[in-house]
Image (cartoon, rainbow, N blue to C red):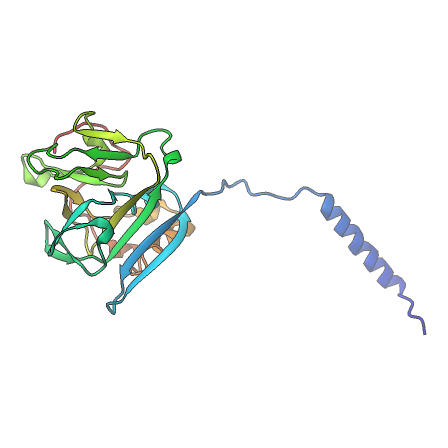
Length: 256
């Protein structure tokens, strides 16, 4: 017996082939939303059970993302309960000496690489020469990234303000630098926002800013929080220890 397709089957097959051909000739829809640039971030964190976990993750390259990983260059000395330790040698669980609450365990440390081709406009690095702000402040030189803020001490202690490191540039003792090659930068997070001693200078630990989540889309917020696996919600960052200026507001120079 020879099978002969029915007229209905032939018509259905013909329509399907025609539709397929028409679809191939129609222009494909493309999204008007610009693709977000991404970069690789590395982080280590202290789990609730005391374990230390590490991860390497791709995420957007927006300012709030980079600010969490770009405060201090390799070799920057951070004061711990066992003495100064290079930032790249810090391990979650180490006790960092804070100016507000004494020793506090390091909960998270993140790093990223800053590439030379990213420095097209404003030089992103700031070198602070030894003794730039007085004897041992800093000691030795400190190389800071675009995510760093330093304490500007005022006559009235209640007016102390955290300012972007770029605002201290004076072209002599605090100078702007472009990375000659890939430069690894770091930032650290404690249980609460605090100031710490970095090479003899007073710098802040990471905090994304009060209400940061309201300025981000749901997708961006999920990507951002995924970089901090030890936190469950944006409010876990806590409050700021001091008022501070936005990283984009780096007019200066000013005294420290």
